[in-house]
Image 1 (tube, protein in one colour):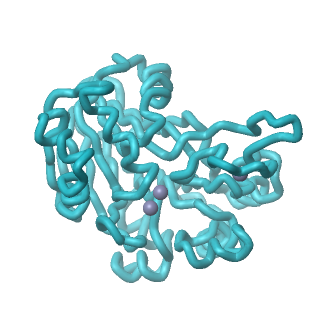
Image 2 (cartoon, rainbow, N blue to C red):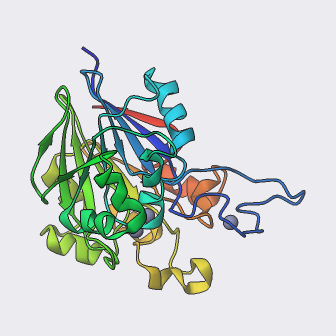
Length: 292
Ligand SMILES: [Zn+2]
Ligand SMILES: [Zn+2]
Ligand SMILES: [Zn+2]
């Protein structure tokens, strides 16, 4: 039986790349062409029983489903559940595509926290996805493992993040052999480590017995966006690298995801990318796969 397969369907922060309106070299070249095209982060998880589970529901759903099927063989339109980490733009702005104007799904299970489901129910546009039974609300609780197909389980773990609409969760995704932590957004290591009672990121990862961590790499440094990055939250990659140090033989793989359009990690030839690789850590590509 094949192992659980996780496919990373996007590497960008919610705004995507190119970000609307950006004329700088991160998004546009000197001839007016697009420098690179990256979708907001999402995961396609294919369980060993063939069931397919999507994490995040972004506006690039169409191309992401094509990308996913090119990796796992599809079927392209098969979806057995959808999971949401929180209510920010790129994580939920494709929810409407499950409605009658597009996919028109039938009772597709939507796994989200109580406050995230409230956001859906309180939005006139999104609430009809539930009342018209395109989606069926499946409320999860932090720390409670949910069994999906085959050996696949997902355990939501709460993390602190500008929680103005909903709370925010990371997902611990487990197959028969390995565990992967998906943590696209959080505000600071200080707060995240505090609620998970760990002294450092590696100690936290060890306590979860994870083999792979897909981690918030939104900004390279606090100076990005002319200093505004420091106010937006998301620990800068430079800070995360300082906490991680060089990768040791028993450390998990750590892959930086959710990259803002300004982040030099989008450029494989940048000095920033070379530094991450030299320390033994990884930078996301789309698509990228992990067998669990
Ligand atoms: Zn985000
Ligand atoms: Zn840009
Ligand atoms: Zn967010």
